[in-house]
Image (cartoon, rainbow, N blue to C red; front, side, top):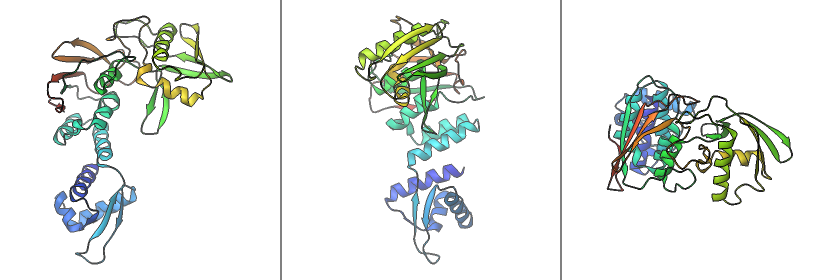
Amino acid sequence: MKLKHLYILSKEIENKQSNKVIIKNLAEVLGISERYMQSLLKGFERDNHITLIRGNGRGNQSELKINYSKLQIAKMYVKHLQKLDKTSLALDFIKEEELISNNDFQIWFHSDFLQSGVSKNQRVLKFSFPDTNLNLSPVHGRSRHDSHFTSSIHDTLFTFETDFEVYRMNLILHFEKIETHAWKFYLKPDVVFHNNKKLTSKDVEWSLNSAVKKEVNIIKNYSFEIVDENIFIIRAEDSIEYIKGVLSYTRFSIMPEKTENHWIGCGPYKIMDMNNKKIHLQKFDQYHSDKPWLDELEGFYNEDERFHTIVS
């Protein structure tokens, strides 16, 4: 609830377009006592959520600076509700605040939040998005809507952990440096595609080579060598941190070797249906990592490109 209060305060300051506040008035905005408002502000200061310069006297203005953007606080609050397994409250908040209409929030919601954690509240999320020709190929997709769905269907060797700003292994179990510009990678042994085909080094080779052809010179002097079905070597004249960043890029998602069916991936959701009215995704029960917290996603095309919202 405290994060919800912080979000409301950020909205109030944004609407007023001023950091000058009267604490009594803030208490009225939140519907709490002035005494509790003072306690809340002290807690926010302690947690470094705000910077407050208090005015002298009861009615004087104070200067309140919130150390996060409104959108950052919204994400923090939604993730907090998810950890408490309060899926319904999280979705209601997103709908009420019309957060899904914000492009930055859309990207986070589809590519990060929907794929994280496990919820006991099994639900179907229905939402609308602009009527567009979806391209689910990681290599050839262009629009942000392509990226949203591609990141749900497909998976990458590494992912970027936004909370800690580090790259973590995803489809990779382990890797080691074997030469100055060469690294040996070991695949997780339990990864399968949506068609139940086991992930192998050949799939990785084909996928990365397809992406490298599209993104010419993105990796300097790149070469790929298969050791066995679970082990491969990448040679490049870039740093390993740079390579991990590239391999976490959606365009470098791993697909079955020589596939022309971009519906098939090894990501957290698999496609159940896709037509000129909607796209229907279902949680992939054999997913190798944490299962998504929603069982199904249903996206409905809407002719108005301005309209993008959760409808259920």
